Length: 371
Ligand SMILES: Cc1cc2nc3c(=O)[nH]c(=O)nc-3n(C[C@H](O)[C@H](O)[C@H](O)COP(=O)(O)O)c2cc1C
Image (cartoon, rainbow, N blue to C red; front, side, top):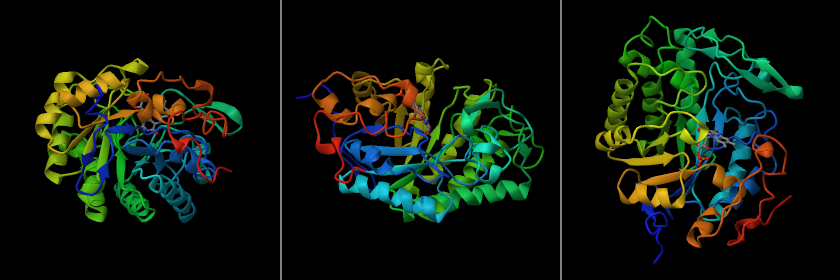
C-alpha cells in the first residue's frame, strides 16, 4: 500500500468526483494573444489531466483587468471558445478543470490591457514595482483610477458574467482570485482601500466587494461550483501586514461558510520568501468552514499526505512541480524523482518549456492532436 494513500484517493463533491486529491495550482503561463488562450494550451492542460483537479491560470474578467502581458481573459466569445477546446481536452482524459477568475486592479500596466485600458482600483494608491509590457519593456506600474460605486458594481457584474461564461465553456467550477494583492484583495486591504463609502472603512465594508461577487456567482452558477483563493498574511504585490488581517479573514470565512461554497483555497507563499500562514490560522479556518479546504505552497507528496491525514486540508495544490512533471500524480505514485522546470520559460517561450516536458508514466505525454 502506498504511503501516500490519502493523496491518491478520490474525493466526491456535490457536483463532481475527483480521482485523486492532487490539485494543479493555477499558473499563469502567459502564452495568450489578445487575451485568447494560445494554440498549444489544450495540449498543455491535456498533458496534466491526471491531476484530480486542474485550476487553470488566472483569466481576466474585464478588458481593464488583464494586467500581465499575454495573460488570457474570459470576457468575450473568442476567449470562451478557446477555453472550451481546453476544457474538452481535459474532459476527454477524464480530468476535471476549474477556471481562476481575476481582475488585477492596480497591478499591471495599461499597455497589457485590451485597448490600453487604464488601471483601476478601490483607491488611487499606486503599487511599487515594474511590469513587463510589449516589446519586453519593463515599466513602472502607473497609479490606478479610483473606482466609482457604479464602476465597482460593474466589476462585480463582470465576475458574475465571467463565471457564467466559464460554466458555459464547460468548466466544472470557477475559482475567484481573492489572493495575491489583486483587485479583490485590494478592496479587503486598508492600505489599498481608502474609501469612505460602503465599500471601504470597516471590515464589513472592505469585505463587501468580495462577498457581493461570491453571492452573485453562487446565485448564477451554484454554490457547489464556486471556490475562492485567499492568501492571508502573504503581503504579496506591495501589500503590508495589517492589524485587522485575522479578523477580516475570519469574517469572510464565516460568511463563505454561510454561503456554503465548494472550497476555500489557501495560498501559502513561504517557498517564495513571504510570511507563512500560521498553522493555527489554518486550523481556525478548518473549524469555521465545513466544506473543502485546498492548501497550496511548497508542498511535497509527504507534506501533502501529512496535511490530509491530519485533517488540515482536503486537497493539496502543487504549482511548480506540475510545470516540468506533467504526470506528477504517477510520479508520486511511483516515488519517482521530480524534474525542476526552467524558470526562464515559466512566463514566456511559446511551446518551449510548455508542452515539451515528457511524461514518463502515462499516455498524457502527448495529446492526440498536438500541433
Ligand atoms: C509560473 C507561475 C505562475 C503562477 N500563476 C498564478 C496564477 O495565475 N494564479 C495564482 O493564484 N497563483 C499563481 N501562481 C502561484 C501558484 O499557484 C502557487 O501558489 C505557487 O507556485 C506556490 O506553490 P508551489 O510551491 O507548489 O509552486 C503562479 C506560480 C508560478 C510559478
